[in-house]
Image 1 (tube, protein in one colour):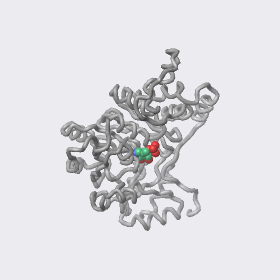
Image 2 (cartoon, protein in one colour):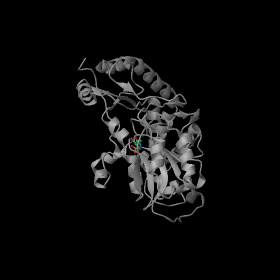
Image 3 (tube, helix red, strand yellow):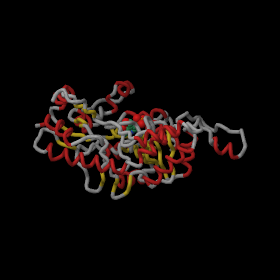
Image 4 (tube, protein in one colour):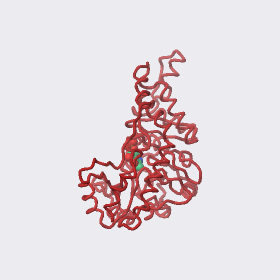
Amino acid sequence: MENAAFLPYGRQLIDDDDIQAVISVLQSDWLTTGPQVAQFEQAICEYTGAMYGVAVNSGTAALHAALHALGIAAGDEVVVPAITFAATSNSVLYCGAKPVFADVFTDTLLIDVESIEANITSKTKAIIAVDYAGHPCDWDALKAIAQKHNLSLVADSCHAIGAEYKDQKIGTLADITVFSFHPVKHITTGEGGMAVTNDTVLAEKMRAFRSHGIAVDTHQRDKDNAWFYEMTELGFNYRLTDIQCALGFSQLEKLDKWLVKRNELAQLYSPKLENGCATPLTCSDDVTNAYHLYVVRTKCRDELFLKMREGNIGVNVHYIPVYLHPYYQSLGYSKGICPNAEKAYAEIMSLPMWVGMHESDIDRVVRFFD
Ligand SMILES: Cc1ncc(COP(=O)(O)O)c(C=O)c1O
């Protein structure tokens, strides 16, 4: 059994349709800034219910574009959860602003609403909440705080495309919602991301930002027979290629089926873990979880982690509280500011969760917790 094939915690699934979609683009005129980009943006909008989608070359770029569009700048503070991938708070640093870490709820590891309020100051301009592991945050409570303090609200939903909060798909519950299409996520473009919004001005700002800060796009210039363009602010080259967008579009067609599979895998895990030494995070009744990750807490995490890795189970830990990273420590964040996050960090482990898995794979995993 110890020699069984390596079982990663997450991975992509690529079928012949995906491959054909990519080949078609390679044989076409447009490898980037072509029709596939608009088609993919439109498809994500239709899927999430958002009005505008801005495709970029990573979830990180989407977060950066979102904060830039919201006007986050030096002197501002943005509240972020302690348990997330570093990209969430790094995007605040990219804008010259200061991330302020809020603690998380112990049962879901989602940002704790009271901790957000406790961290709001006169400099706070925005909140980024993360739908950690695929479980939507309490968006009604977050919207209420944002409204009360006149703050922008960003959904880092890199873990949660297709998830639902009170029967509403993630995508329109914050001012801007951000997705990632990294291969471990629900659908992939290799690397890639998208920011969606219902706000015309924010969408236009993000569109310019992904292309050097140039407001008029290539197609408009072609239509107008004009060579003239102006760079009106400093942007980046954050564009996503047509090759990637075609892959994303093809993957999106399978997303609903894959979300059902992820939920089925979660339903298989939970009874099999019941009498063991690991407890899964809880899932609220008013959400449909997208299960990007299947996270359990266990007191003997370090010992089990090693044993499982030796047994070819690709368990992982998501995440070290961001402010404990050496870089953040060098910025002056002290240990102990988010006790729930630090306690959870010692106990959490992500078990394999991806759509190509079978019940026999789950059996291979759960036996370590007996
Ligand atoms: C919560 C969260 N935010 C942002 C990102 C950044 O996404 P990307 O890797 O596409 O840049 C990730 C990626 O893992 C993530 O997990």
